[in-house]
Length: 257
Image 1 (cartoon, helix red, strand yellow):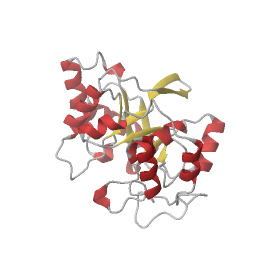
Image 2: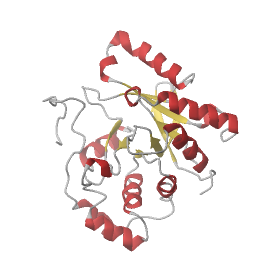
Image 3: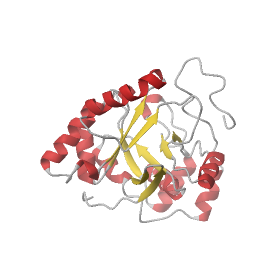
Image 4: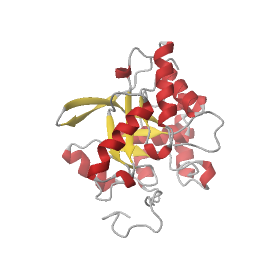
């Protein structure tokens, strides 16, 4: 797939104006089993057409992401930094009024950037919509309806549930989704990502595999059917990511558990 692939965008609204965010982004949380470095993965993603990259201070990859952006500019893969949408996150230990700005400045220095497009609180204790777990095993119906009503843009993390290194995957190993994938001539991952896209939700996928990066972009020229939706709605629901601490905080989640 050429780097000129057109990726749909949605508008983020804020007090400072409007900013468009590509609906699909590359997650950069480290994967111990991967033989591909974060820098090389980000460079390959830029070549394939990705323009949205999701980082965090807690991931320990901001320097590698920044190096990849600098290399992409040097190689002429992008015309300017403005061509990219870069997200990073404030870790919970820095979530105090006097530490927020220093933490942001540290992330900018490490990324070698002058600004971020989006700076999120990593695991906010007072839960506010932004980047949340959404996948076919945790569809977040109530939250999506609330955010749609309020005009809040959601970004899904863990859109494919979890990697094989963490055990059985209740989404990628789902027999119903395998049947849907066969019927459409697609992969299970493509079915999952297409469903999220059709909900109007942006999402970050984490794969450093060149072929999977390509497949994850091939979801914009076909649709799921009403029958597909019926089958998907019957998938067993269970939250995957319980929280940032052990033991878990009793009041972290309010309704859907």
